[in-house]
Each structure stands twice: as structure tokens, then as C-alpha cells.
Image (tube, each protein chain N blue to C red):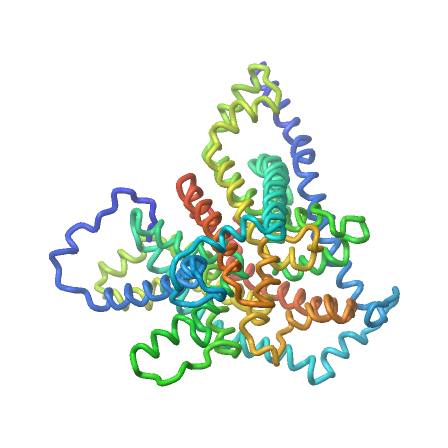
Amino acid sequence: MLKQKIADLLEKSTAYNRYFLLAPPLLFIAAFFIIPIFWMIRISFYPGGSFEYEPGFTLQHYLRFFLDPYYLGTALYTLKITMLVTPFVIVFSYAVSYLIATSTGKKGAIYLMLIVTPLFTTEVVRALGFKIFLAKHGIINTILLATGLFDEPLQLIYNDFAIVVALIHSIIPYACLVLIGVLVGIDKSYLEAAKTMGAGRIKTFWHVTLPLSIPGLSGALVVSIIWCLSIYSIPEFLGSGAKYTMTMLIEEQILSVFNWPFADAVAAILVFLTVVGLAVSFKFSEKKEFK
Amino acid sequence: MQASENQSGKPSGSRQMPIDWPDVGFKVFCFVILAYLVLPVIMVIPTAFTESVRITFPPQGFSLKWFQKFFTNPLWLNAFKNSLIIAVSTCVISIGLAIPTSLAFRKRFPGKFTLRLIILMPWFVPEILIGIGLLMFVPKIGLYGNYLSVIIAHTLWGLPISFLIISTGLNSVDPALEEAAQTMGSNSLRVFFEVTAPLIKNALVSAVLFCFVLSFNEFVMSYFLCTPDIMTLPINIWSMLRTGFSPIVAASSTVVILITLGELVLISRFIGFQTLYK
């Protein structure tokens, strides 16, 4: 009797508590994430240009982006980089994720540590690292010249090659985290069933593991595309400087040209692509990630 | 398919078998990728100990002069101080927000799925978009050029990650223990600090470490929000990299890398990185 009463009381108080507990984080996210993003999208419709813009509604910034070959070129260049990077990201991160998911004991933890190290190290330091490797007198060229196969250093930096190599490096950890989760979650009994029925290792992989990891693969694909579209410092630092990605265009428009509505329009296009990508990936991995 | 759970895992009997070439090939492939992931970060460290005035490889001679310059140059020290202030504040605010969030999410309630999605959302949205959004918005509330603007930006990352980690920690706590304390007359706050918090100590410490690492290394959001007064270490490294290739950049990067690695090792000691994909 008394126990029941206490339980009821607790239940009621937790309902109030819940709103009390959830209010601060939700207000925080509303105020500093949702409102700013919508504010940015709103400004992208304001008429105006460098240094000056006023409330109103116009599509001029979007039209300018899509109609001017130079600006549209940044989108195509970004797309080209994305298409060069993504296949490598998928294959490399799938292999490493498979290794981690099948490793036991300390080894798995060590591999995971090797993956999160570049993930958490600031991209500025990673960009510097790639410069040390790829520069004219960098590590790779020093080794190549020492082997005697080449007479003069190769141009490995300030071109698309450098961007692609560094982007693959940056994105693999994100893709891995998505893939490892799915691979670890695969029920072992399926694999044993396949084995009992006489399937070899490669057959088991092809017919069981790979189909079961499709949610992870689609997630990794979306992660890879979103990061390719939105990484700023690597193309800026390792690229030729002649060709701009969308993020470099945004940065230039905001910090050098001060055409904020136009920059916001380009950013809004990225927001749109991100939302579409996330919606697709949630559709695929609904149960997994947000149970 | 079990990762790193099995502590006693010694491959049994695989030694007697003949060499498994496909497996060896696969492992070599993976190790090459792992090397590709780690080396660009690690190889920055030796270049900081060079004697020459430019970053070269292999480094010439051995000297600590670039570290000495880093720790005596007011510009770099100021950036270091700013980074620490911002990272510590991010930890405090993120944890402060994440604890009540994770407590609320322990029970089922209507709208749980959507609310969870909203709280995790900033983690999935590219930082450049958050950075620009805040750059447009922050002057409106008078925070431009204030530490708070950058701290807010970093907390948008710190909150989801601490929420995930603390929630995982709370999963292993038996609610009966807390209810017992509550029926014995402790109020919720006391229950949390005296019963729950000690039980999820590892998760709390790891959440703090994660927030610190994220904030300390964050670049793009800070890049848009920082004024010269509140410049962080990655921003300063970036602006020096654009103008030259002095080993002082390698020295400061080494400081960042060593702090990051130290924290990551600590995290792996406390809860490991499994929370990131589970």
C-alpha cells in the first residue's frame, strides 16, 4: 500500500522532472543551433551584396550561383573531388572496420586507437602532416629519390592528388565508426550457419556478411559525401589555389568579399544536401542508430 | 564479430595451420591503411626538433629551441591559454547539460526518438555550417569576439558526445539503488551525487576528456568565430602555416598532438572508444 503510493509519487515526479531536465539542453540547441541555421537560410534570401544587405526576399543569390559558370564550377569541382574520394573511403574503411570487428582482445582496442587518433587531431595539424609527406623535398620524394627510380622530385602537392589523398585520410575514421557498429552487430550465428552448410570464407563473406552490412555501407557513403562537401581547410591548404571548392567559396565570400547573403546561399545549398543525405541514411539505418 | 571485448582472446591453434595467404594479404592491406591514417599525424613530431629554420625531412640535428620559442612567445602562449579556457569551459557546460539530458532519457516517454535526434543533430551537421550560422547570429546577441561564442559552438559538439557516453554509463546502473536512496528520504540531487555519480564515474571522466579533445582540436567553427583576442591554438597554427613553414608551427602542432594523444590514451583506459559506434 505505502510502497504503491511511493511508486506513484515517484512516477509523477519523474514526469515533471523530465521536462525540467530536458529544458536546458533543448533550449541550448534551439537557441544556438536551430535558430542560427534558419537565420542563415533567411539571410540567403535578402537582397544586397558586399557589406550591405537588407531584409527582403530575392532569389538573386541562388540564381547567381547556378547561372554563373565560375560559381557553378565550384560545385562541379566539389562533386569531382567527392567522386574521387568516396570509393576509396568505402573500400579502405570497410577493410579496416572488418579487421577491427573480427579482432579480439587488446588488438581491436589498439586498431581503434589508431583510427581515432587522426579523427580527433585537428585538421590543421593533419594538413601540415600531409605537407611534410608530399612537399617537393618531403618524405615521399626523399624516399623516391633515394631508391633511384626517379631523378627529380614529383609534384605531389598543390594539386587534386594531394586534396584527394588527404581527404580520404580525414574521412576514413568517420566512415569506420559507422561501419564497425554495423559489423559488430551482425549476429554470429548467421556466419556459423553458413559455415555448417559448407560455405567457404569468401562465399560466407559475399553472401552473408556483405549483404548484412549494407546499412553500414550506405551510412558510410553518406558520411563520406557529407564530409567531402564540407571540409574546408584541406582543399584550401593542399590544393592549387586556382580551383575553389564550395567551402572555399563560402569562406572567401564571408571573410574577404563580405557578401554574406551570397555566402549564406551557398551554405544553404550545403545544408540542403546534408539534410537530404542524413534523411537517406536514417532511412537505411533507422533501427540501428536510434533505437 | 566481437571487437575487443574478449580480454583473454588468444587465437587458439591457428599457429599449427599452414600460412593463410588471403588472410595475410588482407591484414597487410589493413596495416598499410592504418599506417596511412596515423603517420601523417605522427611524423609531424620529429620535424619539431630540427635545428634549421624551415621544416625539413629528415630533421637536421636535434634541438628544443622551437619549443622554447613556443613557450616564450606571447602570441603562442596567448593562443594556448585561449584554447585551454575554451576547452575547459566547453567541458563544464557540456557535462552540465548532458547529465540532466541523459537522466531524462533513461525512461520511455512520448517523443523520445525525436528529442534524441534533435540533441544528436549538431554532431551530424558539418561544422562549417554551424560556424557560419553562429557567425551570422552571435553579433545579434552581443557575443561576437567573446569566448562564449566559441564555447557555445564547441558545446554543440560536446553535448551530444557526452550525452551518448553518459547514457551508456547509466545503462549499467541499477535503478533500484537510486530508488532505495530516494525512498530513504534523499532528494534527487543528493541521490545523483551520492549514488548515481560514483557509479558512472568512468563515463563522466571520459565525457570530460572527449569534450576537451574535441574543443582543443576544433578548427572550422573557431575559424569563423575567433577574433584576434580569442584566437585558439589551431587558428594560430593555421595562420602561421599560410604565411610560412617555420618549425615553430611543428612545435605547436606537436604540443597539440601530445595533449590529444595523452587524452585518448586516458579515454581508452576509462571506457574505450566503443561508445563511439555502439
